[in-house]
Length: 207
Image (cartoon, rainbow, N blue to C red; front, side, top):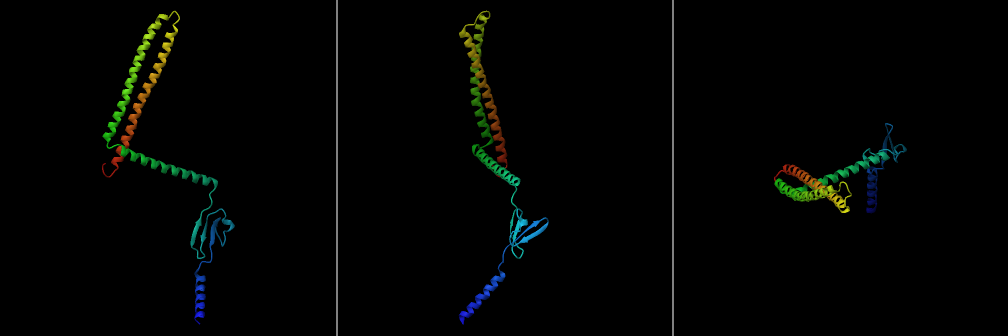
């Protein structure tokens, strides 16, 4: 008797479950302005966006249409641009943090700039002094060469003049490089100074 009651109860529960459980998925899409649905994906939905719905009409999932080669290329380009922008922002944050850790104040930046400029200015003065000596030496060679205007110049004097010209050209390049270095140092520290001020002024509390 108890076994019969238990079997009857199981049959009732199975019937209730069968009535409430979803019977499958319905696939729907829009084709030429009309909704097309089916128990399997209708041919009209191939290559289009479609919805997976319950028999009661609830949307379970929306599947986007596959991208065309042009759309895929555009999405990949946008993703590369997004990653590049994220990398740029992270690099800028690292530079800003490094700047704040390097300097303690605006005065500290000015002091370091002046020291760096003074070091290169010393090298520049030394290069200019060397240039003056070379020019003096060349003037002596030119005076000596004046005696050979109407006759052949001795080979050693001609070679000395050529060497002097080469040395002066090289020294001129050194001097120009030192002047460019000084300008680059000033510009770099000026950029650091401006960025440091902008960063510290935007903070809620002073450093």
